[in-house]
Length: 201
Image (cartoon, rainbow, N blue to C red):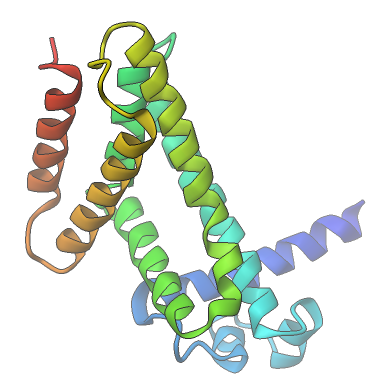
């Protein structure tokens, strides 16, 4: 058991090094040698745990997804118990916006991955499952809110969920690009949620 734990810690050490590079420099120049230097290990060790760069990219991307999921879970719990559709949707979308150090780091890394995917379609299948699951979850929350009378019956939950996520992703890019602050982006999101659910009480 101890050996397995040590191997996992080593894989995590290397993957986290890749994520740090992605957050600061992007992924185009993140060679295995560069990752090894960032992780403080030998190139041979990186190649032992990850035989290809793609294997490393996929592993690190899964870890990034787990970090985002943990952040969303914390925000949903903080929004109150038992969770309600509106508070859950609001917490999830707000947690994604780059308004603090953790969310800015996560957003920068996702942007680095999506930039890489544009030039390497083989990574596409690994980049889409989590957004698809998130969109599906938000759709279910919006449908529940609609059934409870909190959202107008003519709204399409799936289209609305897709639109909200697209808006949040766009707002996140505008924050990273310096167009607006995280506070302004949050205010834009609240405005649209108030239009959807009605003003918060």
